[in-house]
Image 1 (spheres, one colour):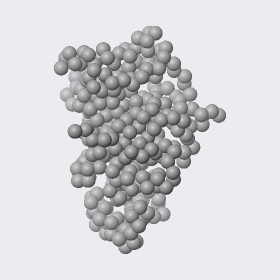
Image 2 (tube, rainbow, N blue to C red):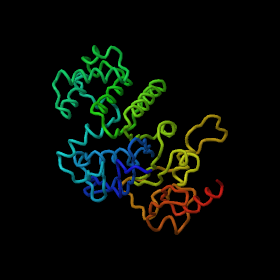
Image 3 (tube, rainbow, N blue to C red):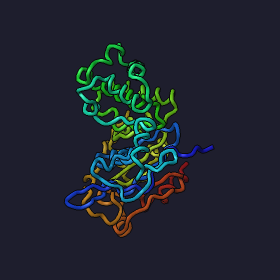
Image 4 (cartoon, rainbow, N blue to C red):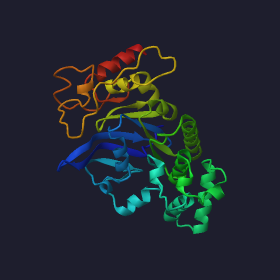
Length: 333
């Protein structure tokens, strides 16, 4: 039996003022996340992943942008245009967020325990003493040794990996339904990265919360997610189960991404994706990946926008050749 979606993002567009006019940074993002599911959101830097997460949290306006169209529904409630009261209730209480660069997300003037305790008090209305106990308990849960003692320390007294653990404790302190992890292992060494990923998997298994895992590291995504949504130049270009997308990608961009990463025992050389993601001000009439695509078809890929469609293989792909690729996959299975 299929569960109703916890999070639904449909036809999302986000604009920012660039060069004196409103310019689309995200033009058509779509994703669905079920309760207890882990979804990977992948793509090169500049593809719109983090901006999409800001829209889910209702933070686009605070960053100076706007959402001209689209919908973000969380637990059946519309986030776009929601009241400040609803947004405050969602953030921290029902949706936890792990931001990039934890050292910059923690206020150096407050202890790590205060960071967590303040969030607990704001959403749970408990006493300072109870909030502090909760903070110490969470620091212990995320693997901070001597948690009762270290809760009184400041962020600069923690390593990068420990700061990330503090961010995780803050994100889960109110037992949210959804955890958004934006590049949670970036800038961490391999050993610390493995420990953080192990911790996230354990927390999800214990609580049953869903996770939106944002990353450009496809190797990590393959380890922790059940489904993957691929973004390119502000659009969702492919969405399917992790196993299907990684074993038989349906979009040329997904194939190019997978071909550009090293793998164990790999024999052929890594393939370079020529060119770069177009800037938001670049006008492209057809498929946005068309200028970099080695499979493009003249007069089909460069004349009009391409819609995201469900293929015969059961996944969503934004490509004029998606059905042909899907049929070949079905025939080969």
